[in-house]
Amino acid sequence: MDDFTIPQNWAHYSAADHAVWKTLFERQTAMLPQLACREFVEGMHALPLNAETIPDFAALNDVLKPRTGWQVVAVPGLVPDEVFFEHLAHRRFPSGNFIRGADQLDYLQEPDVFHDVFGHVPMLMHPVMADFIQLYGEAGLRAQRIGKLTELARVYWYTVEFGLVKEQVQGASGAEEALRIYGAGIASSFTESGFAVQSPSPHRIGFDLERVMRTHYRIDDFQECYFVLDSLDCLLDLARIDFDPVYERLNSGPNYAPGDVLPGDKVFQRGDRAYVRAQVTASV
Ligand SMILES: [Fe+2]
Image 1: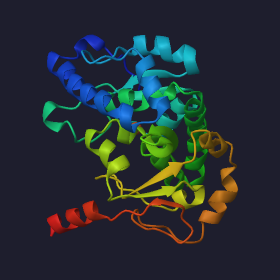
Image 2: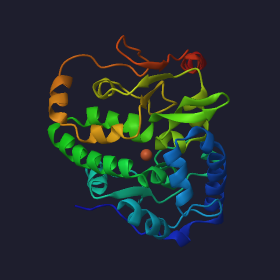
Image 3: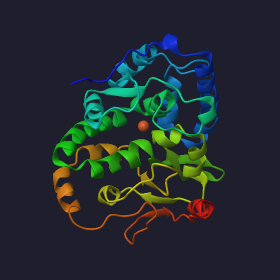
């Protein structure tokens, strides 16, 4: 099977490409220490990332591979699901080889090198996420064979891409609990980083596997709901689950809209949905 990998060919990036990286990098590195979880910020600082140039994957892998066994490989863009899962199952993270244009800083049609590297690789430095994504790749191959990919993909979406995690932080009056970003879709987005953590609009609800696997998600705008892990270690419990009985249960019962709040939810914040309502008003 073609694995879709290509040489990164670092020399092909133009000065304009590096300038886009710089803008994106400087915005996120200024903001994320206050909004992202400790593990993300540590990973970000431990990697050979800098504002001036798009990273060379070989240099990244020199640090990443000894740490967790992962490596970044270049691909031209989105790859077929099966190819994606095969890579993850073998601890290879496929990264888009291109970067968005300066006129599309906050808009992405498909993941580019900033999303894939800056958003994902800091968490791949963490052993729990490293194991979780590999096991997700294996689970994805199986889910695809048995027709359960839609349900499983929601787990990835609401964790690896758009997950929040509880963290103890030092507040004005001592230690307090805060919600922090670990999902790459948020961490690589200037506008969604603040929205996900600070806006009163979205719901923030405790992560529950079956609940998440029944919940649709937005691919075209900010999320209406973020699911919150008690700690990153919960990902390991999740990775060890036998999904077959869960898939069986999902064969019946409801699916939920992204903005639903259910009676059994552990609600950290019930969103006022002002953002969603404004979008609806603007489109009529
Ligand atoms: Fe991603």
